[in-house]
Length: 512
Image 1 (cartoon, helix red, strand yellow):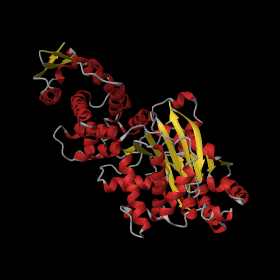
Image 2 (tube, rainbow, N blue to C red; image 1 turned 180 degrees about the vertical axis):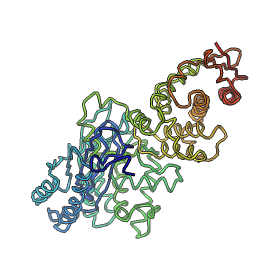
Image 3 (tube, one colour; image 1 turned 90 degrees about the vertical axis):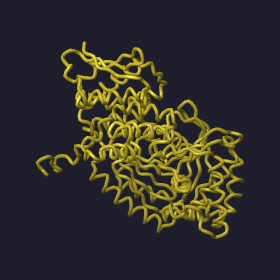
Image 4 (cartoon, rainbow, N blue to C red; image 1 turned 120 degrees about the horizontal axis):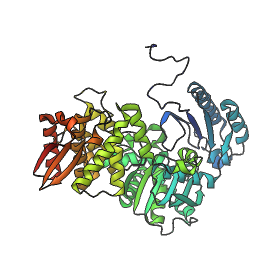
């Protein structure tokens, strides 16, 4: 194995971006301490390592004004391990962010000093306004077009921000973190509702807001997962999961009611043991937020303060980069046989769309290009399972900047590309998320890929030399004279399939 690489010289695997220097964020929250190491500091962040330790630094803080020393010891032990991880991964820069518990505790200075000594980096204690700002930027980084209110629910506090035009404003902070409200309500979810309602009356952002509410934070992510399981939703990922506000409100009320009666709340077995007791308090806060804001929908973001902090330190040019496109380009470089072929495929598919007169809006163009970058990512898999593996990488991958219907579209394109138009291996419920119109477009694009690859063998240089035309309901593929030998039974079979999907009566291949 050492003939291919030497760890003493460079521990970086060949499957990582060449020359990328990892960046780390240590997030010291009121409920947990988490280290995330990203492959590089870029518009699209790819986690290399992600671990948390439930330290409950905010437990009892409202009563004593101090962080419990046993919780400090637990946090420092975890941080020593995190420091080792950062050294082993040769992290270039480490950013340490501390939030509500450290901000409010009277005995936090000694803790902060110890963290800085262990990590060899400065701790940034965020104010409530800064926490709201970076949580909003985190939501923007993963959902660039989001407009509405962002709420980041931590262990000690709730931060709210308004987002419009890709920027945030009017940050607010409330003592409504799940640990804080659990303590303040004497471990009674029903009382937590009253506490949340009273404290949120001071909010200016939630008065008749309407529109979309973006929920950030681990407890609210657990709520989203419970909702997905109970509703038999085909994707179990939180990022960009959007639901009707009334439906989420109903679930939250069921959870609070069950907990108030000492019963197990719906879906509790799908929540980690460390979050299970906190979910009813997160549900109580969300109930009062949704009622006060009169929101129409709830969208969940897995990206928050950590990602927002890194996003905020990018320059304007990098911020403007499409995160989904950047991710697709990176995957193409790492997994396709020829990244340049993707560029040929983009030009080839564009020519086809123009030839048949198919309209294409900006989002459809974007997803088509992304699909072209991802079209060859399954080639290392076994021929019988390449389709499933490629679909899994797209539908269940860590890409941001794409909603769930977009994931379903890309999944169906690759399902058809690898398995054909009659494939039945991929969940119909998953593919249905894109809707009938986009599903039809995905099948068309997948069929077009099936025409392209027999001609190009996934190598650049061929596709720019062929073109399509349409006349008398016949789809014609034009080959240059020196490529006339490509006209064979296999290619014509694929072309017939494409014509059928596109609604043409016949297809033909001509040379010249």
